[in-house]
Image (tube, rainbow, N blue to C red; front, side, top):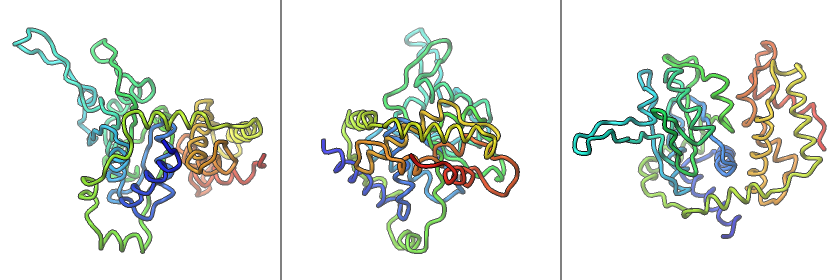
Length: 306
């Protein structure tokens, strides 16, 4: 498999569906190649669900979608055992969580109890139902979408849940040229039905192994540790990054390097993925009118490059 040719084909196909958002497409691909989960945070109608569908189809993965609502129960995700008279036994009926890509649509409209039902699945790649542990498919990738918290009927995701997402991105409104293409072009949902799968069974696993093989030199790791230490200094954030967050930054930077055609991680790769990888894990100090992403960028400016 020609890795760079394959990655370019994947990127090109996704950009035909989600127009005018090449940076966000790159982030989504990096997140999937790094084996992480993705949170898309934006207002309704900007293409969050379409992007999730396009990712699953393009990467050739089995797809399942759950619309999260306030009355959704954990068993609606994981499945239930139902007594079947013919077999004279309880038979387990798996829920939608048993898919390679689970789209948790509007995750912050569900109750905290249902949100927390995803925790074990996202971290352990398994679910425990009625005392029995059941493995989830491989790969298992959660794409969650959420609406802004000031909208009616939303619940804030707890910190423990946010920490399970490798990246959080925002699509934002399209620019004028991209919006004109959307207005004049084909229906995006109809385009999804025509999308071919560009990866065969096992090829995604090969690409993920390529990510792990990307080299991170000692000066680069020193730079990451400097950034982690800065996040813990109290100057920018109330609490600093955990070791799990540091591992996530390195994994995401390796995927970014592979997508850029390199076999080693450069400081540019770390800077490219850092806001999307850590901003949702941090609470800014004070009320300076700046969100976490702006604080992360300010911290980046203050830390010397290796």
